[in-house]
Length: 119
Length: 107
Image (tube, rainbow over all chains, first blue to last red):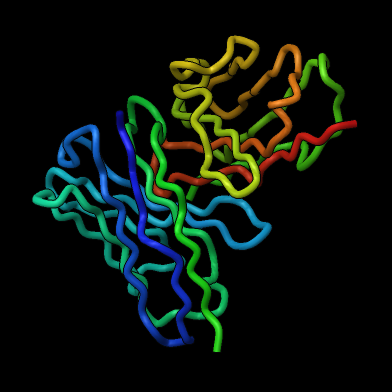
């Protein structure tokens, strides 16, 4: 069965970086893209970006453009999202999701990783 | 970026009720719209894609309709497990913007 398992919660200071991993199983990572979505406490869903796992092409949200890098390692079936220069408003749960667009939406999601940015 | 306006932001309903949630896109997105259900502390779950196609395993009381700019999610007979927050998302163009969410609460 398809699963996406994310790395554990992180606490970071403002200005630091965080790298969240998302390990895929039950399918071949390179066959579909991965999107990243975050959710600030008590807030809605915010699309962060997409990576085409087969070619490494990326699309990033304007709000985080320049601070984010999404990568994949097909040898370990793992996708990564690194966010730099963290601010307090980056505190959120970060989700990876298998992206089947334009055919479908996001059909499998990771369990989420809470990133807390606090001094 | 395409803006998605979802309404209402919350609603109170009883088990057995028919519930309707709408999303309006700021420009035409054909049928590139998905609906998700999210329960507290959990990841979103895909319910409907391509505006009206039910994801495998999702109960048939959920249905979606619309194309272009106006879309609707209907729950025909609300069950206890349906109390949650619902989001629409357009995936016609990047960024894949989400609606603001609709919290369905128990009356």
